[in-house]
Length: 627
Image (cartoon, rainbow, N blue to C red; front, side):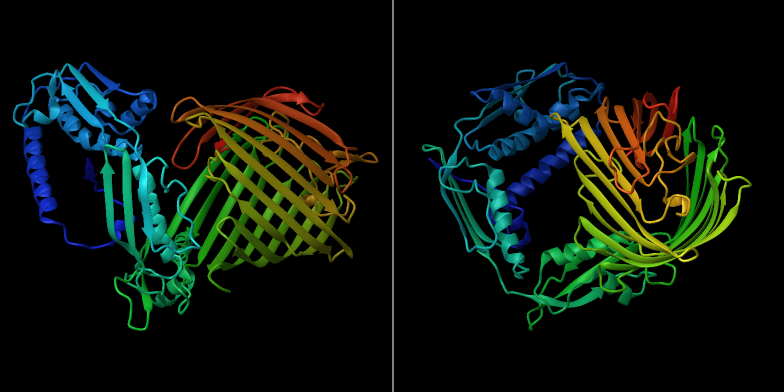
């Protein structure tokens, strides 16, 4: 026996074809039934829970099928709820027929028999006006029948440069998901070649039950090949229309590519100026084979401010705040002014202060290039020195891909440095000119709370100490990796490698903030802040090389609470490149995480496990993972 099936495809939803009379009658019957059920649900009835829900599935793969069916069943979702009204249980049962059948189709079962019994009565036969006063047992019985394989598996025409799913072939398991994915891949293949209006023109899907075969024929209509036409802004915005088009970066005149459309939307969102962004294609192409692109945006409020705080038992309290303008001159320019005060109340420490501003203008030298300017004042009061500094910088950053970006700039700074380690605390003026560069590769699944992926940032900053006639370079590397384990990925292993160094001037001449220390929340937890330095012939200062290693094991106890075990180690040496001649120290501890919309709240307790730079327990509280 052969049966024609209607397996909807995502690609087919693009086509606008009139429905047949039979389908219209089916829709009307379903609408009337839904209205009657809705009326019944409004009638007052006692709220009682049902006692039990059981799934009985025949066949050798019953355990896997039960898990799959339960995941889509509304009845299964109601199972753990108390005081559920009988009307809700009946509505869920009657709706589960279609959900369970669709789940079976997805696994390749097209001869399945699904029965849902409420206290022995078939749920489909219970009228909406005759809901039982109380429901005791709900039983779902499924006979999946044989697993179907593909007989005919035809899709044409296809773009040979766009691969189709491997499972769409004669003799392969005939899963409905494979049919849908194949249809979508065939359409996307033509769209990627410029045929923006490609779609499924016709489909024939027949189940031959006697042979357990599924015959599938998909006819693709690719339509015309288009080029990008005009870019039209369809909404009101405080950002000028020409700037919206520049930021979107749609390449007018070039062959249509859906990736360009998605990238345009992402560029607009990345400015942070818009609350919502929609970039879509016009319904019809022009007579010259051009297709207009429509952009609709909704502005965010232009101004924003925020505050933050961190607490460490050794470093004291750190306070920060910022003020942000998202559209300074009407071109989606951003100005962010932020200040911070750290080491407030720290053990044996004096406060540090900083005030910085950063201006950004997107799409200056192309859609993926951004211009920035920075300036700031800082006051750092450390055991070895006091640094009062002013900086000014200009530069550009570029997104090479969704995961790779780079920066190139020029920076000028003027510092007044008091060397506390020298007799009489002498003061010197230091003028620095540098060329900071960086490249970032970010493949994390979530920058705020990563569970999978890789992050790499490499920095190189050649500089000249104009006031002393010295030259050199500073380098830094930050590598992080994440891997989740378990079915629910509740266990995450995270690791971090930090490498930095100073090439050129001696430590006594170099800018103090270029010298390297270890200890504290950013390097080795459990060791006092900046407790590891090096000895330069009786003078202790920061090192010219640093190596940091960190590892964490994170486990989610609940959806919002997690526990962490961690260990950190740090190395500081006098040499420019780590050679092992310096000193190490290490720390380890345990932590708690509480998940919030802005990132996990972190509470870590750690102590020293190696080296002689500290003792006792250190406590760290902040927002976001340690790395």
